Image (tube, rainbow, N blue to C red; front, side, top):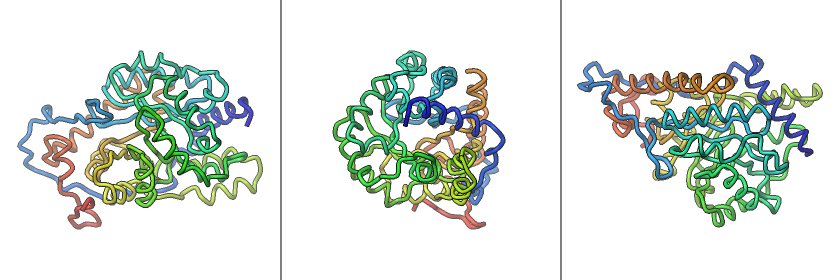
Amino acid sequence: MADGDLVSRKNDHLDIVLGARCAAPLAESGFARYRFAHCALPQLHMDNIDLSASFLGMTLRAPFLISSMTGGAQRAQTINRHLAEAAQTLGIALAIGSQRVAVESGVDHGLTRELRDLAPDVPLLSNIGAAQLADGSGTDWARRAVDMIGADALIVHLNPLQEAVQSGGDRDWRKVLQAIGELTARLDVPVVIKEVGAGISAQVALALVEAGVAVIDVAGAGGTSWAAVEAERAANAADKQVALAFADWGIPTAGAIVEVRRALPNTPLIASGGVRSGVDVAKAIRLGADLVGQAAAVLHSATLSTEAVVEHFDVMIRQLRVACFCTGSADLAALRHAPIYFGGLLADPVE
């Protein structure tokens, strides 16, 4: 695909996600099916609750990852600068969007070590698509993506559904797992695998960890539907019909967290996809996540200013703190054992 076509596609994605056309979720994240047991006697000082988390050997002030958003369009430079400055201010992790355009074209669109300078004290993750790994140059591309921004880890995103319904998408995925295994053996930083909104099953997660993957981001259904986004971009009615049939496809995020955590009790796990409040964050951590990511929900703020991004996450952090307080949880370790209901009955989803 020509570089201009790639940039045009990235701009389309931004316009659609920012617009009202895909604003309403088309699938359920599953978080609404869970409710915490309220603790009427917390015996805590809410201001002293410890929300810190560890990721990639670094301490975060709260268990948040600004998830991958955009990496190809010119306006991504401003967006990523706002995100990097906010991540540093908040003490949370940042993952940038796909670097495919920058790696292929050599035009960085702001994806440079300036981001590392803006966020020197927090985890910074680069990003490349899994389908691009299998063409023989994948490891070289990955190294360039990491070096480009001075990243602490590399995200490899899995998006087979999006590729399947996208005009000109990558259809041949036969060597992707092998390529991921080769990459993890050769790359100097940890590899994180994430879906883009259809979820990762336990079976796939096990295969990925066996291939050397260090962290799994389940990125389940309930947030942005990339099938629906591609339906908006479709050039004809038939292509749109094909894509729309999969608009609510995927494993709900809450279910994916539980399934993968049961299969991999010791693997660092990120939850993203349909996380809309700090209460959802609390539920994700209770279900087994170590970190929780948001992308589309913060994208509008990222187009405005660093301060708007900080304000967005300040609200999320305050909500998470209240959830901890009202479950009697002094820290995230305690939150992981807070009583929770599923279908009206007390449950322990992780066991």
